[in-house]
Image (cartoon, rainbow, N blue to C red; front, side, top):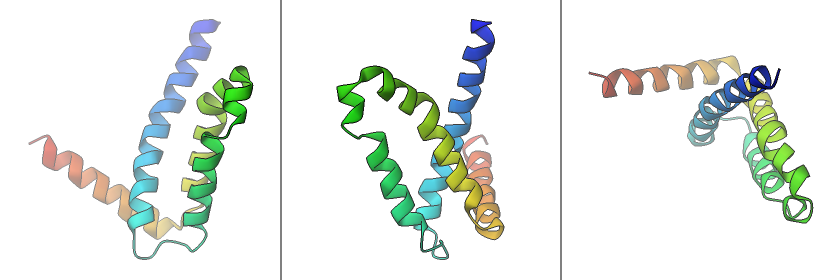
Length: 99
């Protein structure tokens, strides 16, 4: 049972790495939604809030589960056109680096 949960957590973190890359590119995209920058700042502040230091168990749950889920939710809220442009950009970069 623990192996299955660890595999889910690993998949969540792989998704988070991709979402983090999408978020970085989306923040630099000229057509980004106006709400994206404040939402990203709030997520960053939430990820480093003092509660993580006061109650370590809650900080651990935040960083492993809640922050990646919120990040994925923000990426899913991006307009489809922008998200498609960003996906194409990431795919082109991967093709260029893998000869």
